[in-house]
Length: 215
Image (cartoon, rainbow, N blue to C red; front, side, top):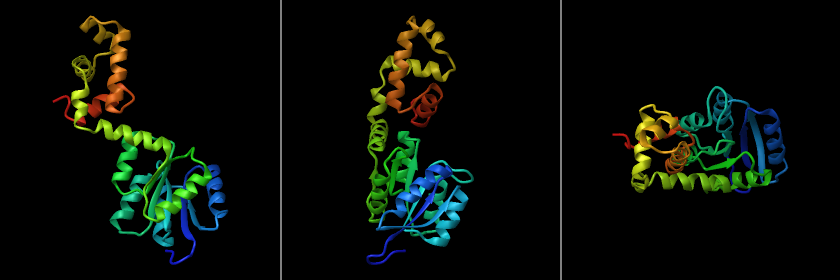
């Protein structure tokens, strides 16, 4: 680990070789950073973290063998000193929320610039929590949907449609049962998805069950 004015030691774990190479080059160009290793999957990443003790491990959230969350869980269990910065193309609010709640130092989109990622590495090493602009939006939505007010935010009609959806009825079936147009049911479904922070029917039912909205 670094001391004084030494460069920050960085490990990059990313299964896409072209993206990993570009990020490695960006890190190597920074005078305040030192690239100490690369990994193409989660098992390699974990072994490298144990062996190289980087200040910051930059992990892809989704990797072969072990995903980023599993790597971070073992790092925490073994009380390894490396901090974790996630890079991901997956910015669902629940994933971002869970990563930060579990101890990640930051979560950035893979669309972030090389400069933004390198700056995030230095910030995470200093103990700060770093979120990209898109990630801020995702986690803000997740915080809102986790609020106790979320359940009451569902309208009576949305709750009715939620119950029918959970019972396996299709949108046309629901429209017929409630004497509504299919377009109206679709609108209610979209509003319900937004309030629950999900993107489809299956996820809505799963999230509703998790929150006890179908009890």
